Image (cartoon, rainbow, N blue to C red; front, side):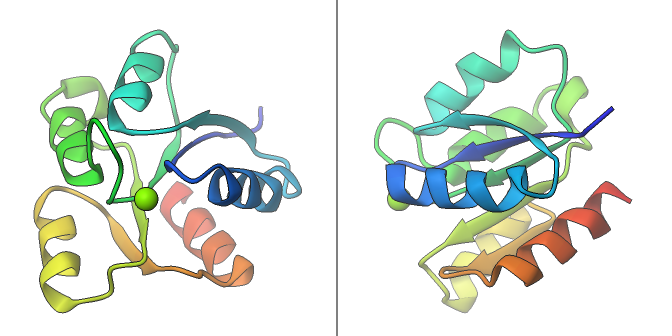
Length: 122
Ligand SMILES: [Mg+2]
């Protein structure tokens, strides 16, 4: 069965671009437009294999989203990739402290993104 990836970004352009890249590789995709939308969607799903999330989003940012996610047993080990325009060391450290597995800076090269996805999915 193909793996299911959630893409969380307030930019429709980014959501669609990342979705296109991963769908082409056969992954299933669910899109969410901010952290709150992502949490609402994830609760009504049987499971998710990997999450790609932005940081700067309205209503709920990526850090808060990951924090909420990690507080639940079910999503404690779900691989999370942060994909953000913020590339400063403090943002990267914060992202990893909140529980992200990887931090990538936009614009991500499709090959690098897919390589990291495969690595995290084992
Ligand atoms: Mg954003």
